[in-house]
Amino acid sequence: MRIGHGFDVHAFAKDELLIIGGVTIPYEWGLKGHSDADVLLHAIADACLGAIGEGDIGRHFPDTDPAFAGTDSAELLSEVYTLVEQKGYRLGNLDGTIIAQRPKMAPYISPMRERIADILQAKSSQVNVKATTSERLGFTGREEGIAAMAVVLLQAK
Ligand SMILES: Nc1ccn([C@@H]2O[C@H](COP(=O)(O)O)[C@@H](O)[C@H]2O)c(=O)n1
Ligand SMILES: C[C@@]1(CO)OP(=O)(O)OP(=O)(O)OC[C@H]1O
Image (tube, rainbow, N blue to C red; front, side, top):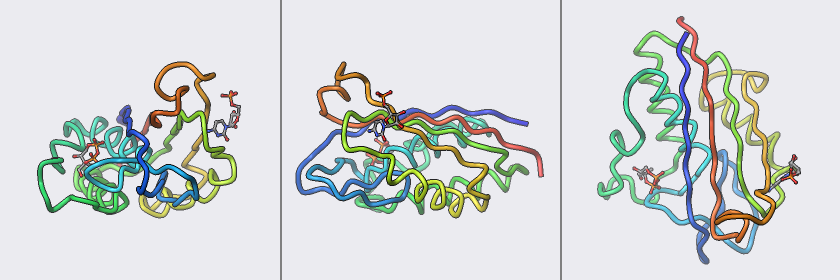
């Protein structure tokens, strides 16, 4: 068994989509990044890479490479999961946390679990996603951006 942890942050911006956990959320602000800025999928990708001792997402998909400009983070996570499989592991379970003052994530949690499970060739029961505000404290509390964390447990195949 291997365990990994991931953390990511993206800033809010106008004229960007808000895509979290592979789900597009209708909102007045989106997230800014070199890719589609899916903060939760990035945290999960980092957790997977951490678990297999393969560094981080920026090492595999540099934000200086035009090939990844605006890229779908589901494709990045899928590539990361191919690496996980090549190393002889599969998902045991994962637990993700979105830290956002707004918008309310509750309506989107179930679709996120389904989407993430689909990318990781797992069942949605292996994927937990939750959300919290930061009680108006810090950059998330000031609604400057969104943070996400993930812990992944991998099992030998
Ligand atoms: N962006 C968010 C933040 C929170 N939730 C849900 O609300 C609950 C209460 O949040 P607190 O930060 O006050 O603990 C939390 O447990 C989530 O279920 C949400 O949906 N979207
Ligand atoms: C995903 C990548 C690559 O497009 O870009 P960003 O969307 O900026 O995301 P980040 O979490 O800052 O780092 C990883 C990057 O390499």
